[in-house]
Length: 254
Image (cartoon, helix red, strand yellow):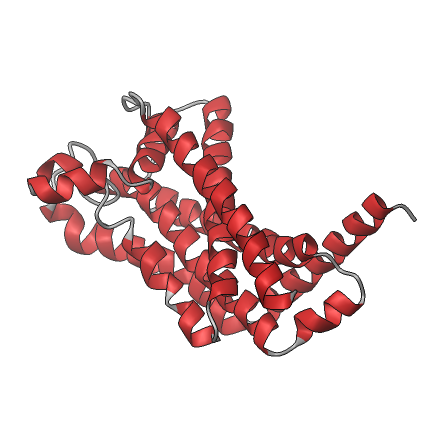
C-alpha cells in the first residue's frame, strides 16, 4: 500500500470514528441541532415585531442563524480534540502511524456534517414559519459553497483552539467567542442602526460579509463587495487555522 493510500485510509477511518462519536453524544448533538432553531423562533416571534428591517423579520434573520449553527457545531470540535489529547487516545493513534492531518480532519469533517444537518433543520423550520428565498438553484449552490467554506474555516479554527486548550472545560470556552460574533453583525439588526463605535466593528469582522453574501444569493439583496470580503476572510481564517493546528499538534504530541 502506498503512503498516499495509507493516509487516505487513515483519514477515512478517523472521519468514521468522529461521526460515530457525534451520534453517541446525544446531548451535545441535540444542542447543536435544536438550539439554533429555538433561537430563530424566539427572535422571530419575540423580537420580530419590534425590529424594522424593511422585510419580514424571518427572512432577514435566517442567514445569521445559519452562522449561529456553525458556532454551536464548532464548539463541540474544540472539546472533542482536547478530550482526545487528554485521555491518551491520540498517542495510541500515533503509535499506529495515523497522521496528524487524519486525526484533525476526522474532527473537522464530523463538525461540518453536524452543521449541515443543523442547517437543513433550520431552513426547514424557517420555511414553515415564512422564510421565502427568491433565487434560482444556481444561487442556492453558491450560497452552500460560501457556507461550507465558512464551516471549514470555523471548524479548523476550533480544532486549533482544542489543541491549545488544556482541558475540555477550557475548550468549551470557544463557544462564547464563535457565538458572540454574529450578534455585533448584520445577523439580527441592520448595521446602520448600531452606535458608531459598534458599527465599525460590525462592518469589519468576518461574519457580516458572509451574512450579506448569503442574503444576496438567497434573497437577491445588494451584495456590493461582500462576496469578495467573505471569501477572503474565510480563506484567510482557514489557512491560518490549518497552519496553527499543525504547529500546535507537533508541540502537543511530538
